[in-house]
Amino acid sequence: MSETAKDRQDRIDDEAAEWVIRLGGPPLTSDEKRAFDTWRSASPEHDAAYSRASALWSDLDVGTRQKRATRRRNATIGATIGVIGLVFLFTQGDLEWLGLDRWRADYTTATGEIRTVSLPDGSTAQLDSHTALAIHYGAAERRIVLIDGDAWFRVAPLDAMEHRPFVVEASHGTSTALGTQFMVEREPDSVRTTVTEHSVRVVTRTPDGLTHSVVVGVGRSVRYRRDGSLQTLQAAPVEAMTAWRSGQLVFDNAALSDVIARLNRYRRGRIMLMGARLRDRRVSGVFSCSDIDGAVFSITRQLTVRSVSVAGLATIIY
Image (cartoon, rainbow, N blue to C red; front, side, top):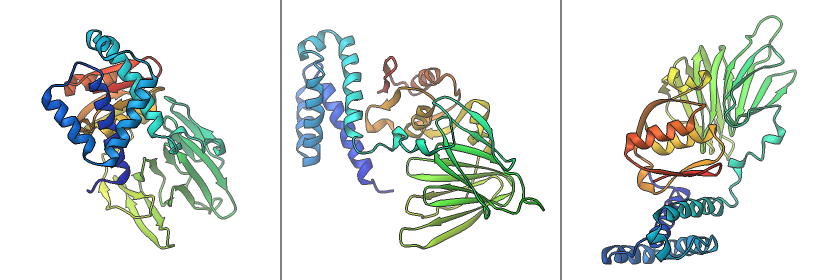
């Protein structure tokens, strides 16, 4: 898969932050100096990213290079603070992760909270951490808007008293129950519907007005992107995917970047990866939703990498 513009910028920003921190430590070797000069001159984007990172680092007043070389602990803390600042700098204008649409929700969960709510028709929805739902029931349908997060639904079935279809809207698509149990997850650039009982019809719409439709059977899932494109149906490890309902997170050979994105839903203060090279490292394990620090500790031991934290703000894995 080709690198998107956002992925490319994220990678360059990561590399710039690494160079700023490295330059704040012991003097570079001649090979490292050549590598830095080559990297910075490779493109205007590299030079601009380094300038931004360097300016922010200077503003943080973390001390001189000589002090950081002799006081490595202070350097690590300074690096963490610098990266925290970089995160805010580089996410300017992209405020979706702050959850600014949650004000229009009827039901929400806080960070780390998992709860079950009863819906007006007798259906139930189990909301994962940091999830928001809006309810729009009318004469023609029972519509739920998944604003943020993940939710598992047990649908009150159609009968003589209930003729309205049950529809979950998320991004540019809908999932309509043809049975009783399914889950919808909003991911950073896509939505995934997974069926745990009977089946669901997923319909998407493209910016030019075209629609795509697929019926998802039990034990299977499908993703659709923001442009309305549907991906291929896949078998779903349902027990692992719904383990959050019982307070667990299960990963089987998952990319570290995906694992970190998931862990971030369950804690205040963000976990971040330092360096693009770590993103595709593979992680397997079962972790508690209520002990994310323990999960980070286990993962760093498993991958033989290190982490540093600033209490209440961020944890950097590097």
